[in-house]
Length: 263
Image 1 (cartoon, rainbow, N blue to C red):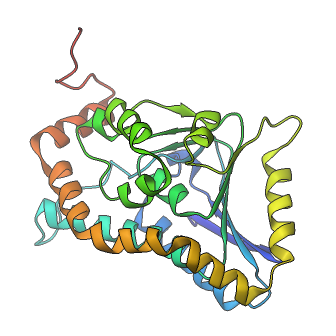
Image 2: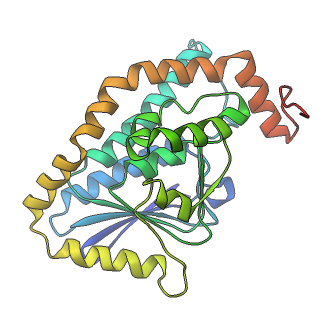
């Protein structure tokens, strides 16, 4: 089964993260699926916008932590860095695409999934959606996704989200500027809000729309390009560290990490 489904509905290309049994964790297949979907959308002159959405109760849980840390002749750091490069490239692809990317979120977003959301142009989330940078709780750093995420929120929100590592509601994410709109699901649904956005995009001239997106995202893309090497190193070293490996094992085994204090 493909990790990402691609379909065209009118003038919108719909990319659906479709691996709910793994909470849509980020895998090589998922990254390849998003990449292929964006390419297909850009090659279709009838596609005016891309909608990124999901099946299941989780939009994306972040990296697939069940994969091996080392393989072949690569060191753990090299292997993790290479995987991070692929994820960072997809984040940049979403931000740089000539088509506006609208995220339609019904469920939870964690860790690396936050990078996808931050790289989209317009984000609508429903009442069951929650967001979180939970990396510190497993002993790693939210480094690779930090250029897009920190471009969307202020320093105070960033400190709370990265240091505490807990979930925030869609309303809190909207107040912080991380998402565009939180809907209640009753008076306005995610589908209603997304259709309203797509209706406006259908009124825009394609060339002007692409140029306007480049204008809006130029600082975001510059930050991604300037910071990515250092962030890849920070992330890879954290995942390969003793602390990171202990945290990942605790997560997989559903045990309490060794650093957790009672008070």
